[in-house]
Length: 121
Image 1 (tube, rainbow, N blue to C red):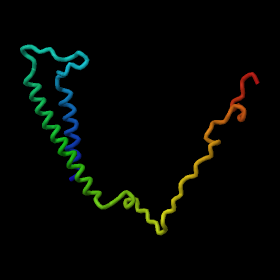
Image 2 (image 1 turned 60 degrees about the horizontal axis):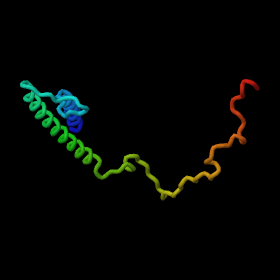
Image 3 (image 1 turned 60 degrees about the vertical axis):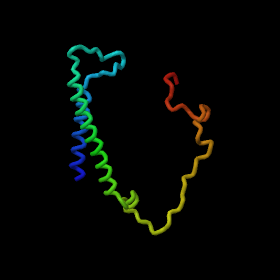
Image 4 (image 1 turned 135 degrees about the vertical axis):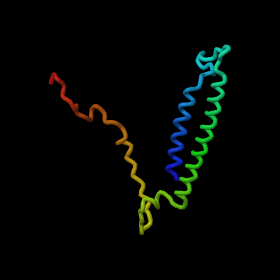
């Protein structure tokens, strides 16, 4: 069931991308687009707009369906349960020891020898 909904979801996503890219830009972004005339193609924009809405509603419905299916599949279990790690003794709080303040600084030039000998030496 989940695979069928996922395939429909992917088809809807690709169709939605295609329909949005086919639409004519009317926003006037960057000074482009616009410019109407007697044959402005308004009917085609309306049909593509309706198709965009239909595909978007289908996309949202399949998204919610996939979320519900995933929630039902994982109900009552945690990540630790899926790992299968069983421990008979209680966990001890072992925090890593922080390095001392001196080791956090890079070595000075006086402390280190050159790693690559110079050509004139």
